[in-house]
Length: 83
Length: 309
Image 1 (cartoon, chains in turn blue, cyan):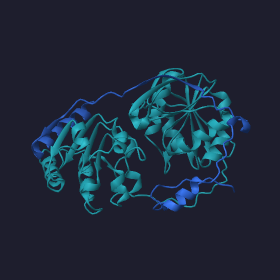
Image 2 (image 1 turned 60 degrees about the horizontal axis):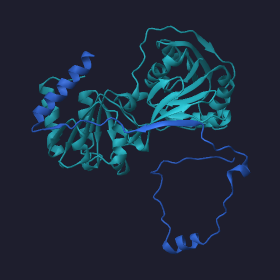
Image 3 (image 1 turned 120 degrees about the horizontal axis):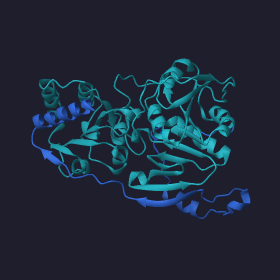
Image 4 (image 1 turned 90 degrees about the horizontal axis):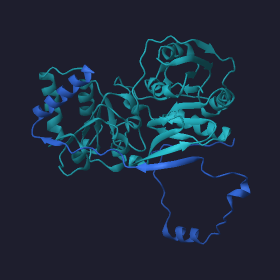
């Protein structure tokens, strides 16, 4: 001890705070302390060159029957195995 | 300018992700791979066969963050890059190692543009960020599914590190989902099911189709939350990120969080009753209808066409 524990999001159902509690929480004092006080350097070390959108997918088609779909899957698999 | 890759393994078997990570970083310089395991010998043999590996290091112990970090921070002086796959071990060990070495890691790398230029997805994959890392050393986690695996046939030397890897945490037990389907994160074909399946019993339909295709099984968060599928099948922002050649999404509407996990898929097939579903619009091929009629028919059709893997 001390220990840090992470939990799966399904571990429990969250208990949502009731409105009076939320209001009460808002009146609690909040202390802001500069990061420099802790002796840590928070300057980013990575330079962001650019941000771009990912490649867009081209629109597909709708097939009318299961047999057409099965044929498509069969074709995809044989193509996969050819590689 | 050499690179140290931390091998991913489970139950004494090397994960397919490692060959992909090795391939991803091969252009950065000679690659050495570290295997931390109680019984590292067999895993080390598999690693030694990966093309591009110049040396395999083995250490006995458990790769939990505190123990692995202690070993890695002493080893790191010899390397320019310390790399792991962006899986659970990488996510556990690398942040701690980065903090100890006072370096900022570059996580979830999907493309390496140069010795210090990397591309990674941000905002759940809705944008790609290119970063330059001017630090003296680089800590990277690699999204294995974004890279092709390195070839085999190598025979790299294996060296044992005598320092024992001791953790303050003790492994008590592991509870596993028994499944003979392929590894979800690196599978060529994935069949995914959504909440529309309606029950764990009905989810078996997905399993039948997956077996037929030699595919891994995925599920949406809603389906996992509802208890239809186990946690480790979850695909999406809070689950696994997959990049199969073919993804078959059944009864999945396509919430943004799920789409974040499947963007790397080459081809997407959607089976859904709603022609307006986001995934139907995104898919390469869609079939509109009742999945409970379609899947048995599809399995029969595939049987008829003697499709089997």
